Length: 261
Image (cartoon, rainbow, N blue to C red; front, side, top):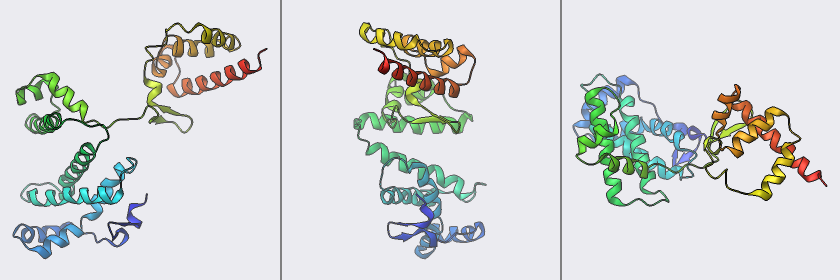
């Protein structure tokens, strides 16, 4: 969606103003002094910042209007809390706050319901992580976050995992211009060794007509439950090549099985 050329919440985004850094410096003292007109000008002049963030969430299936309104809340929080004495651009400070506000909205409206207490633990864990990161200049470990909060490490892990957005197994993770690689291609199949002898007879019959490399790829993938990355490392080719060879081999097998007497 081209957010710069559509109406969102009744706003013609193609006509939104853009404030210069100099104009923002002029407006900030008036905004923090309670000047309503200055605040409105500052908000209008930074709505394109919200639009740029919205593009990161365009594939979530959420209403653009809803996300835009939530992003504006994050923008206004950034305006209220921005410290002009710090040598930081407003956009650098505002973007994480806008993203955080949208992410909280998506988590709270997730189809997978998470208890209020676990969400609270997760949000407090995120706040603790930000404090530790600011203090130490690095990403803290789960153990450090747990110690900061005074709770067991596993509680932190469970809470943070609970608020993660669900991802489809068919979500593409890589594309080299050819066949896309999906999350399901990276998941080890722990049920691959279950005794399915009827299916195995047909599979082995089809595999007997493949070349040695195709046989090895399918054996590693479907009989040993290896991921495409693991197969690529063992054979010495790229993961994209494994994906293409696997698809071609399966296609040949289906054709061979269908024409077999």
